[in-house]
Image (cartoon, rainbow, N blue to C red):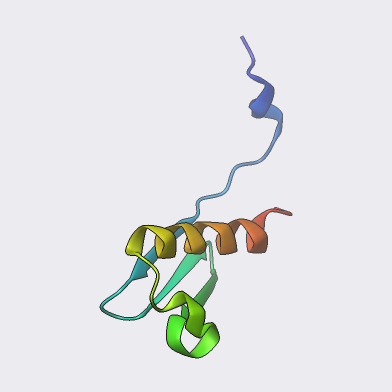
Length: 67
């Protein structure tokens, strides 16, 4: 039985955010990104860590969705 997703390529994506390090980022293959909450978007600095983790996932999706 073939699943409908079998025809699409897969990639590995890892993301992480930290309130201690005040930043977050992601990596996929050899491509990566990093953002600093205070410098790149100060309004994100005061968010709860759960929101910061979700922001990292959303930014990764935006970056690698075409793949």
